[in-house]
Image (tube, rainbow, N blue to C red):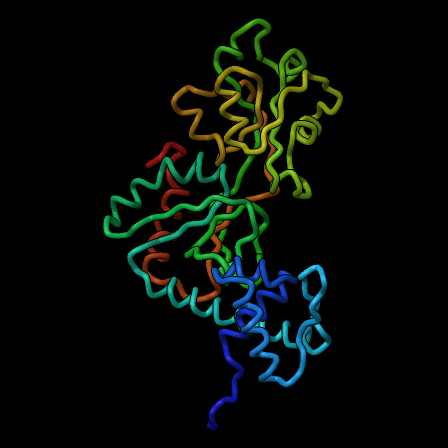
Length: 308
C-alpha cells in the first residue's frame, strides 16, 4: 500500500474547531491556544490545498467557503472516528475502573444503596457513577455501561431488561394517620399531591403522572390540592417523607423507602408502568468488568427490595 498524502493533522484539527465555532477565538479557547495560532494553522491548511477554506469577516468571525464546507464535514467525521476508536480502546483496556452512567433518581434511590456489595466483591475496581438523563452515546462518553428508563430497543447498543415497574401513591405515616386520614382513594381530595416533572420522563408518551394514575384507577374527576413540582423523582419522595403531601412512587424508585418506615402505601392500588429499566452497553462483547457488573445487577434485580 502506498503512503497516504495527508494534510497536516494539527491544522485539520484547528480548521475543524474553527468551522464549528465560526471564530478563531472560540476554536483557540477549545484547543488551549491563541486565536492567532488557529489562524496560522488554517492558513497552512489553505496553502496545502491551494484554495481558501474560510471567508474572513470584519467582525472577526469566519464563514466557510463551499470547498471549506465540504472539507469540514469530512474533517468532523475523521476526528469523530478517531475519538470514538480511542475512547473504545481506552474503555476496554482499562480493567481498573468501571464508569456507570445512569439517571439521577435511579442512582440515588436504587443503585447507590446497593453498590457497596459490588465494590466489596471487586475491591480492586474503581467504581465511578455519572448521573444524567441524556441518551447515552458510547462514542462520545467515557462510560462502560448505562442504565436507562424507557422501552428498550435502542439503536446501536446492546439492551437488556433489568427491572419492570409499577406506580402507586406513597406518603408519610403521619400524613396517612392524620386529620383527615388517608384510607380510601377518595381521601386524596383532601390532601396535597406532589408532582414529578422529571425532564426525561415528563416527555415520554404514556408517562404516568397524577392525572394518568387517577384515570387508570377509575377516578378521573377527583380534584385534589395541587402541590409543588420537582424536577427529579428522588426530590418528590423526599418531600413526601417530610409529610408535605402524597407522591407517586414506583417499585424501583421508592420501593426501598417503604422498608424503614419512612414512607407507606395508603392504598393497594397500583398501575403498571409502560416503561422499564434497561442495562445498556456498547454493541460488543462485555469486557470482564462489565460482565461482572451485569451479573451483579441481575442478582440485585431478583433480590428483595431492600439493598443486599
